[in-house]
Length: 192
Image (cartoon, rainbow, N blue to C red; front, side, top):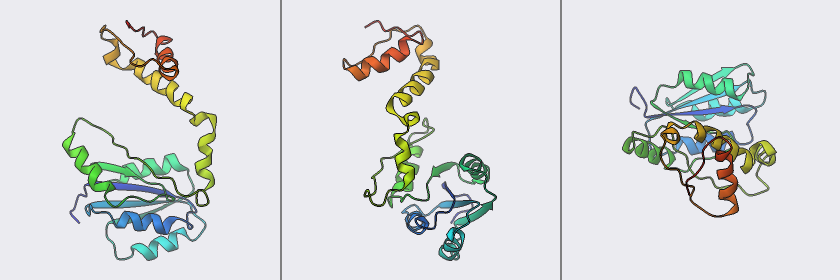
């Protein structure tokens, strides 16, 4: 591995012994070899750290960082401070990466320097494998309507919408009207 990896993978985990093995395996088998994995233990009390240590003992790309229980946000912020690569990929301990994920995303970012973030699709595990965390997405805070409100809030602040140019909302369905109403209430009236 080069001194500065192309990508830092942030993997926060807490008591993830049931899924960590497959997750780590999918990261270590990436086609992009120039990455570092920051495995951020957020005060696990199960077998997670022992499993991880056994898997990574001969892989210099992986750094285990152990902390007291401080929560996801603080753990991720610590990971961002420790990251050595110019690109950061985020991973959950109960997920798996497709083998080409890092390579494709790094190449895409290199080809499009104007971008600051890329995402990817997910394939949901079978229902009997999904943990309770997935079902929290049914909470109204994570609903499509909540997302639309947040998006409208930030779109309304976008300088491109405040240049006095003509504004047109494209689409005639209920969803488009509902989403455009959120911008109208923030002072952005369409001309058509």
